[in-house]
Image 1 (cartoon, rainbow, N blue to C red):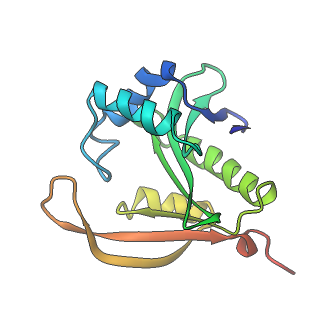
Image 2: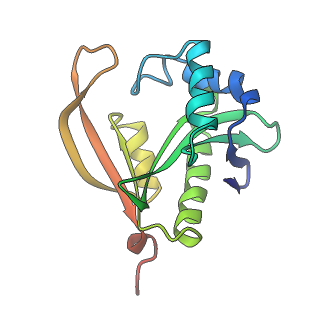
Length: 175
């Protein structure tokens, strides 16, 4: 996959992305709602096995056009049906609140409905603040909340899991 937006490129990962990806996956604040931060070896193993070798690809590098720096990891893979995809994103905290995740994810959603003719794009989170607001901004709607579905990273509490999606018919509403 290769997509361009105004400021970014979405492309396949390469092993040279290890240090930039580790800045993301090795950061406790970035990983707060997912899993404990990765050490460098776990990042390298994940990059090789999931981001590079997996076929079909399910993970893509969000890269700044002007510097070539990988600032985000974007998950995009089919679930249950080849016309239903899951999308997810993790961005380097140094680049938060600059619209990068929205920019590249909206480009990917547009490409998916216009060019790939997908039926539905879904996502999930336990972060009901930042992630949910981006999901809504991307045009996604709440499909359900699984109450106390996932333990927090520190295992101290059960968290609700929010499931959002956008359908092709919602992306292309009829008059």
